[in-house]
Image 1 (cartoon, helix red, strand yellow):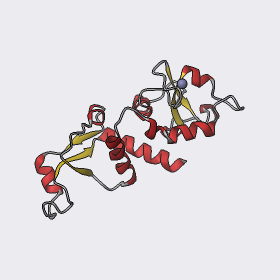
Image 2 (tube, rainbow, N blue to C red):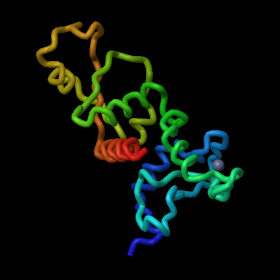
Image 3 (cartoon, protein in one colour):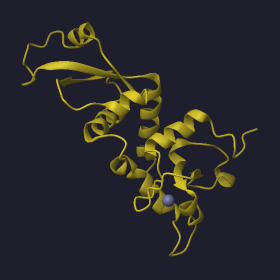
Length: 176
Ligand SMILES: [Zn+2]
């Protein structure tokens, strides 16, 4: 039986990554203690779905409800929608890479010029992996050197964890 307490570890991890390991409420962003909350009550939906779940600190969790001083479901949905914008874990380029994969379901990799920007967290979180030199060359086959106006030296592909997260982000984007 699925219970409220049996949220799969992978799902918790994806939600934590989405929220940047902080309370999702932009004016709060408390680091701990954090709860995983269902936007539409678990008692109603009876399932754990990424698109209906959000990370809140214990304080904000208590403020969930209806009424002018409460954080209602509509507010939580907007907060969730904006998470990728306020999420401080990933830099601008990292967020754009994730968005690219969310919007382009058929793309297997992104190709980039040499860049001083590090994808420290996307790689550390195991969401993307760098292509080898020969894989980049193969991905570029048929394109003339400099055809894009810049020299491509790097390529990144989603890992299985990355694919799972991107699929959930896409599902979330479509649910709003
Ligand atoms: Zn909070």
